[in-house]
Image (tube, rainbow, N blue to C red; front, side, top):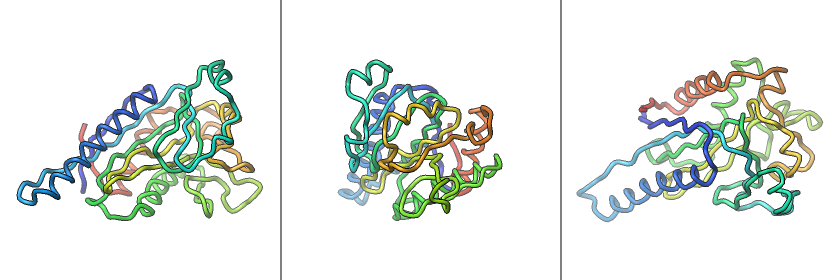
Length: 233
C-alpha cells in the first residue's frame, strides 16, 4: 500500500497549479538523480494527488494542433479565458468551474513501470465512479479517456479527458472529469482533436447537478482501491 499526500486545492489559477505540479515532480526527479549517483544515501520519493477546479482555460498538449482552437487572442480575452501550450501528452482541452481536475504526481517505479497501465487504471477509477451514479462508461478504441456509448459511433461521447507527462517515471498532469461544468465552452475547440464526437458531463447525463464534494469522495475511494494507496493529508 503506497502512501499518497492528498490536497484539495479548490478553485486555483491554472499557471499557479502547473508550477506547483512542476515543483513536486522535479523534487522527486532530483531525489532519483541523487540516489543514482550515491547508492549509499537513498532518499525516498513521495507521491502526491491534487484535486482542483480551474477558472476558464484552454490547454494544448505537445501533440496538439493550434487549428483545434477556434478563438483568436481577442476572442479569448472577450470570454476571460486563458490559453496555455503545455508539456503533457494529448491535444486541446478545456477546464472550467464545475469540472474536477485530478493531478497524480506518482513515482511509478514504486507501482510498476508501465505508462499504459497507469492510464488504464486512471480510466478504470473514473469508470467505477460513474457506475456508482448509474452511468455505464468505458473506453473508446484508439483514444484515451472515459467515454459513454463507446461501441456506438453515433452516440459515443467523452466525459473524462486525459493527458499526462512522465519524467524518470514521475508523472504529472492527469484527468479532467466533467461534473457540473458548462459544456458550451467546448464549442470553441475541437476537443482532443476529435471532430465528430461530442462531450458530456455527469450533470448532463443525470439531468441535474451533483454534489462535487460527493464526487471527490467517491473518486478518492476508487483511486485508492484501483492503485492500492492510502492518503496522507
